[in-house]
Picture (cartoon, rainbow, N blue to C red):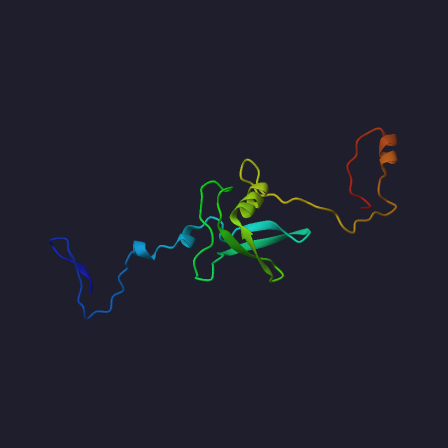
Length: 147
């Protein structure tokens, strides 16, 4: 078993099967390891509608090299990414389009929000208070009765 000698050197018996943690080599680093867009949830234009998708990988050319070059300025970033949508379809988008959509989905404090496009299939019944009834009562009343 492994042990430390008096002079501080680490020694072990080669006959013992001991797993030793080795730090990864710098040569094993890939740019995708720390890519800020990978696994991002984005809302992107698909045809004439907006769909939520996930950035899954960098786009590659026919030789297997990543398409585009990173730039700290998102407008000058020419990388391309594949985005997968919940229906299983995927599409390629430029990094600046992804960045624009990410920045449009957060406020100044970094909180995420979604844009509501429309409310579909809403209805009210006869018990709902109308604006005329509310104005006639003379006092403010907030209610969802009948909606």
